[in-house]
Image (cartoon, rainbow, N blue to C red; front, side):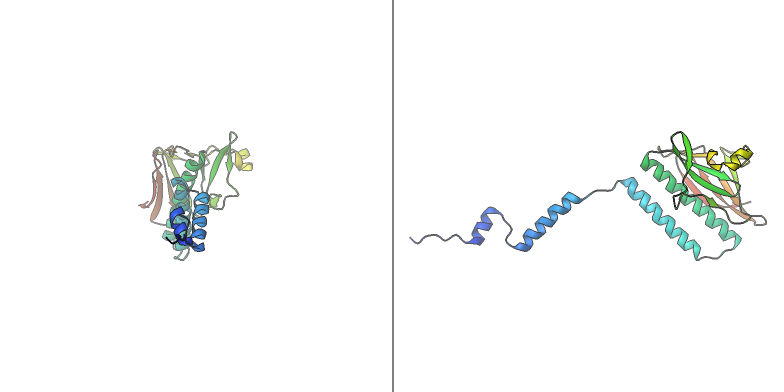
Length: 208
């Protein structure tokens, strides 16, 4: 009886070792990839989507005309999108955000060490000025609020000490419920941004 010759291919088939250097390399890459993979939470993905949506909206609006009606629409949509971004960040980071209005500007604040801190270095949530002559009309829980009514001269000298009128909570709630109207003198229409306690909000066209 002739001796049985065991070839390399037979040994490979028995041991299960890949039969080519390419397979070995692919197996190694797959192993490394699986070790290096890190999943993203749903909230993180939502924040990224919101940021992309905001940038897309700003780009789209930038190429439109600059009629008074379009200026109002632009600012209302911008506020609504930034409100969504700040709310998503509050949930994701487990921190409390605030929204402060003045008659012709607004800014987002972050509650840190028992004080409200403006997000001055944040490119998106920084303080924003309304276009010339455009103003806010604020209503909180269906009660008209005269913006700046309770501010003193000391508050004007140190704006970082002012408190927000609206709170964006890490629970996803917005409190109190509010609506803010963007108006321009002599323009028949206005835009209204509203938000309720469930965190739902929208910007819509409104007749004065």
